[in-house]
Figure 1 (cartoon, rainbow, N blue to C red):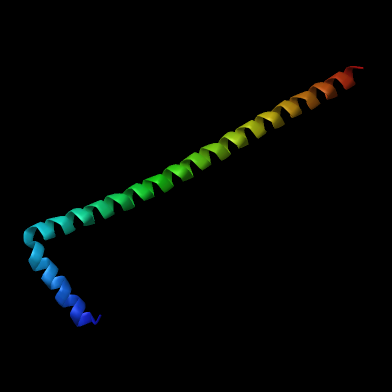
Figure 2: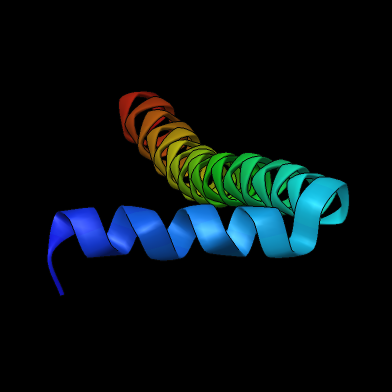
Length: 82
């Protein structure tokens, strides 16, 4: 189909549906925009959840390191007094 024919078909569809067609197109555009916003929010939520998970793992690792250091210091103190 040629571009000119496509335009004619689109013009005919616009005339056929009139104002209701315009309203329908506007609603579809709003729905598409809302869908895009939701996708962005979902992606942001996933990033936030991943960040929280990583920070939780870091916190646990740091806690383990601190406990290990504490045990090492206790051993050093114990060995000095012997």
